[in-house]
Image 1 (cartoon, rainbow, N blue to C red):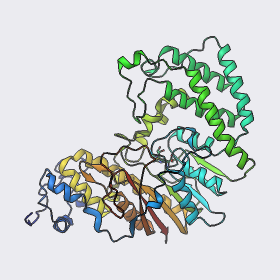
Image 2 (cartoon, rainbow, N blue to C red):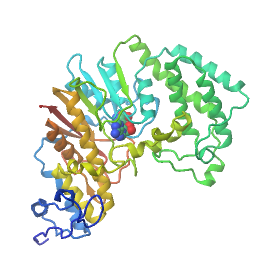
Image 3 (cartoon, helix red, strand yellow):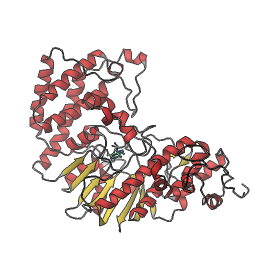
Image 4 (cartoon, helix red, strand yellow):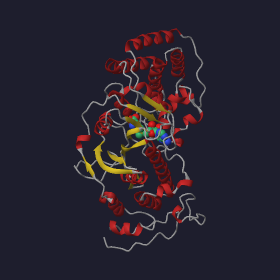
Length: 478
Ligand SMILES: C[S@@+](CC[C@H](N)C(=O)[O-])C[C@H]1O[C@@H](n2cnc3c(N)ncnc32)[C@H](O)[C@@H]1O
């Protein structure tokens, strides 16, 4: 490949208007990346025209290998053969769950006695449960009410004998119920066959009669699982896709059987938690708040953050909102509480805070490359990272000086460009007052994640795909 001299992009493309822009007062608001020339020269790739050719893409794959940050692949973090279903971990599926071994090991590495643990994107509460069983108080934040329900139930020991009795009485109530009217939410008939909806309505009514809130919540989690598995949605998808018409003809789930089978599994899981942790006074604080803004957590309260933020593809791939929507509708949530994918990081471009995206050079390069192929996707990517950067400001406020931040991220690929999220979060962290300690790369054998690329199996190789993830650890210094 002959060396070329790279020319600066002739036309500025504004991230807000997606067009050549004449209105931005600050030049940084446009895609004019002054540092890009040296960067492309360093890559030794052909001049990047509007379209990126295949050879250039192959070179771009190794773009971020020359980071000076401590980074290594460590197979001892893979846990390919380990049991990830201890205690109440498996009570409800959730997209992109963190495996307990990773959460637990990070807590063990960095938490001192009486440490307070925070997961600002707590999802199904994996980190919170690992903190709980070690006796550390914790805080979990999420915008998804289903996530908060699962997290709460997962970390609350309940006497399993009471649960067995309540299950029996619920099943009796349902079989004696004549007819309950179905809830009235959009497209209920499209997602549920009439006999399925009718049984779900009876179950919901019977659960609503349970007075004890902890038991009622426990049953709601099982109900949510039953909603998912008896709906006309395809198995194994995060997004809502309906089963093909032909297959639907023969799809006749028995709602009560599904509920009963799941209840028995979850009661079994709870019995393990109850036997070991009944009477445990460790606090788990679960907050329905937004990690981008000031939360109700006090200044410098947290010793260690262990978290995996969304990957930035909530609208396209890992759609927490779509995953949760039918359950939430059945559980009676509506309005903005259902609008999770738009409220998630990157759901909307915050054009007032564009410099927060441009503050990472790694991100600027990636955005510039993507924008040459697809300007709209570049804008979506930018929207996500601006939001992610905001979270670091809040994390800096709540974490103690000398406290730790462990963030598990994936370097997903957009339009053939791999986003170096591990480097970008380290950039954001350093700007916010943290010091990068190390980045560990692990394979993700257990996690239900979309993987578009084949895995590489060579130890030490940094050309990561979404079959690998990065555990970025930082310490708060100021
Ligand atoms: C990768 S998942 C976390 C999974 C979790 N570690 C587990 O094991 O289940 C990311 C979570 O971030 C949440 N989220 C997205 N935007 C958020 C925001 N602005 N504030 C708080 N949580 C948010 C999503 O609802 C989702 O539950």
